[in-house]
Image (cartoon, rainbow, N blue to C red; front, side):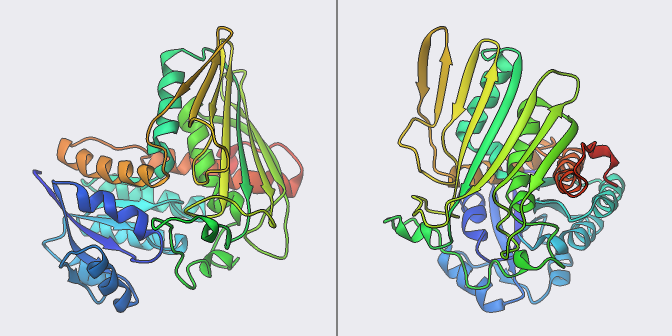
Length: 360
């Protein structure tokens, strides 16, 4: 394959971040758009200065012989049916995280991947965020040495916070974009599931598989706002823990272009302590990566806007198809991330340690 003809399925809020990386890739052409609200697809085509086919149904996209691959930017409860249909139609498939709401659905997707000769990947943009990639490189190089702790802290404010960021690049959340996420019949969980997927995937990518988890997840009147919450796991085969913290600062304006969250990540090893000081938000005026080692502190500067992670994810999907290789987060990794995330809820509900592989 010399180039990729891509269809974007779902032209809502998140497409503003996912699409630019495809649009700028010189070996990718966005040839088709589909959204159940046709006007929204037409608006994106104008916004992106392209002239794609605007399809009237998802099935029309799958029947389009001029579409090689699809990027699914759709609600989680639609993923299973859409991924399977796209693979069975002979399309290369990239799908927005999380993979599904249940392990049974993930297993059904795995069967479709097995019988297809086309690659599947789950879009996990955090694995392409330059500071997180830098941390991975430093871990793999042995600079931090034997890990003993991974800690990811998330502070969540309110949806008005991003409006306090005076920037023409601020991210606009479409009206109704969060409705399905607030519906317990359509979404497997709140922040710990939907946003926690990012953090679970990052921690697994950095340090490996999970042996067992424990958690306390708070429930509030707001289905999404599961804070304060905390989860912990032990990594398989090593003396290393990961801790995930969610806190609410509902009355605090948060400097951010995007969703009103801010992350701080700490990796502690026998030779040093590594910080990733930002991701979605910009609360701290610090370099994005800081390494404490040998009695000194080294700071690393690099692109650190969250949108860079989406650009990297798009580029890697296109490049992987051209180079005939598997990009980050295959079906096996995605299923393990789902099991670990669901295990948090099981651990909280039962007040006991849970092994992710028992989530079936």
